[in-house]
Image 1 (tube, rainbow, N blue to C red):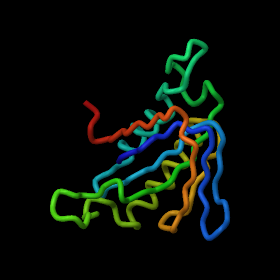
Image 2 (cartoon, rainbow, N blue to C red; image 1 turned 45 degrees about the vertical axis):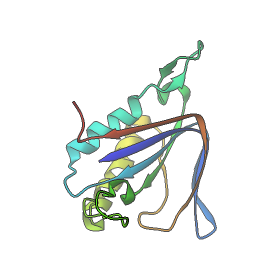
Image 3 (tube, rainbow, N blue to C red; image 1 turned 60 degrees about the horizontal axis):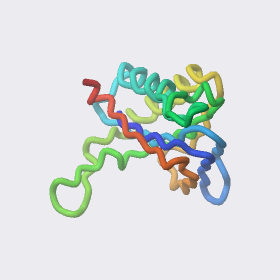
Image 4 (cartoon, rainbow, N blue to C red; image 1 turned 90 degrees about the vertical axis):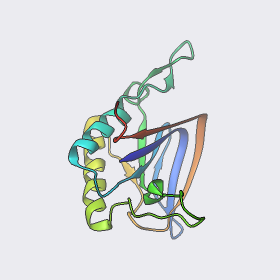
Length: 150
């Protein structure tokens, strides 16, 4: 499971002209799920997302986590994070989980993050053609892969 975390001043997702999810200060998280991911991957990654300290403190050092700044999360599923580009110019997405496996894990991640954060998680719609807008703060972008824990 891969998460691309972008620290944002604001972010939103629009589907067919309608804003489906919107946040101010917080994280836009792009989530890629593979066919090998488990609940253990989900919980490990979810705790990392909630606990990562990438907001500035009074001295401007990245010392504060999402809870400390009363931040929110906009979570977007993105199978293209698992693109294999080693061969040719057309990416292969064979490592990305099929919807029947990915949707339950995506929904569990929404629930897990909401419980850990104490706020509802904003989302897009799984599999939809989404227009994601953000104002990256910093910019700060972090990539975390549950398969690279060591």
